[in-house]
Length: 90
Image 1 (cartoon, rainbow, N blue to C red):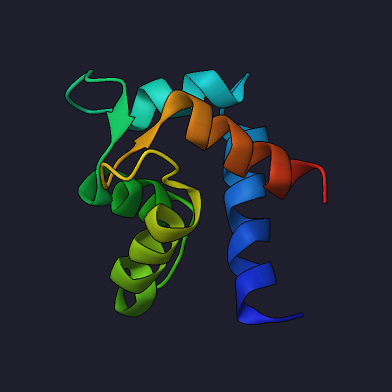
Image 2: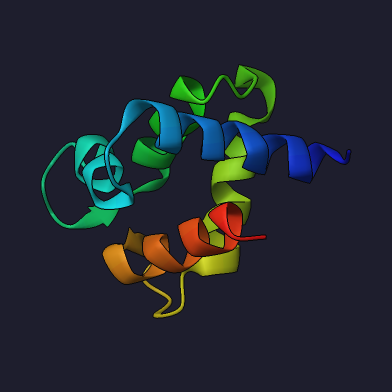
């Protein structure tokens, strides 16, 4: 299993075991309630998913790079939903 697969599996476990829905997880990590996840908020999610502190910043940047479709350097609900769908259903 690649590192990417391991990270995605940990995120999947976090979301499915600790939240009733992906939307509940999104709202939980959206600290300021702006309906977007910043790099810092994504790092908090990764910390809860037990992703090593050493790579948390890199992974957060890669998630934004891969899923931020509108180019604002945040992950909005639609983008988060697309990422979670990919994680949960692959």
